[in-house]
Amino acid sequence: MTKTEDRVVAHYGTGGLYDRIMAALAASGVASGDLTPDHLKGVDEFHVGGVAATAALLDQIDIGPETRVLDIGAGIGGTARLIAARYGSEVTGLDLTPEFVDTAARLTRAVGLRARFVTGSALDMPFADGSFDLATLFHVGMNLADKTALFRETARVLAHGGRFAVYDIMRFGADPVFPVPWASGPDTSFLAAPEDYVAAGEAAGLMLTARRDRGEAATDFFAALKARTEKSGPPPVGLPLIMGEGAGVKYANMVEAVKAGGIAPVEMIFQKR
Ligand SMILES: C[S@@+](CC[C@H](N)C(=O)[O-])C[C@H]1O[C@@H](n2cnc3c(N)ncnc32)[C@H](O)[C@@H]1O
Image (cartoon, rainbow, N blue to C red; front, side):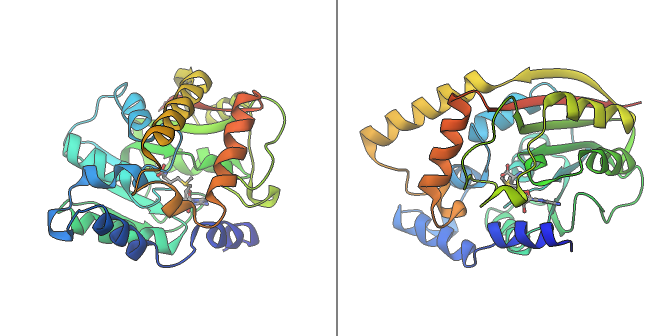
């Protein structure tokens, strides 16, 4: 592991996550035997817009039981489980943070779904060439300095005609104030402009076929969450469980930076030539 990767793992892997999630579920009245994938949605889609944002991107792609899917930087497996449940696909989740990989596997077993979770880096994936038909990347590129290497490695593991669906926070202006949900400080935050993603894709033989800027959708999401929280209090099973210490400050810094126009989430879909 590189020094940066060590720091990324230290940022995300705070220890005891599975038990914290299970305790929060129990406190909200969900017994472990009754657990369904939906019960986890408040905590297992660790990106702006949550499960609605996941669906908004996936709805633009043909996915079926025969599609071999790789979720790069799978976190605790929410997106991988959603794809397995909704489309019946064979899904692999890859993540750098061992605690997240372990939590993803345990949660998947707990809800009775099938998906494979592997520890490793997006920049050196432990998969053979052409192993997948679709790769997804939800809020991971911000931790990767070398976008060219990310796209090159993704293109390698995709079959010809395979697609790469990206939903990352990208740079439109000034850096956010740290910490933010994906980084404690600037040494693990590598925000890039949409044009940099497109150039890295082209260099790897991945051509952009669709793009949607989601800054406005993000501010609507933040406003709706604020209104819900003011009315009913914070959700008992929510992202603070995974964001750990300082979750409120990390979230507030991100919201401010999106509102100021310095950063915004962007969807992109690429296809391998
Ligand atoms: C903000 S979380 C998003 C997790 C997940 N995609 C989701 O949306 O719920 C970023 C994830 O990227 C992972 N990550 C960061 N750098 C990585 C790398 N070099 N290779 C693989 N995963 C990485 C982290 O461990 C973390 O799980």
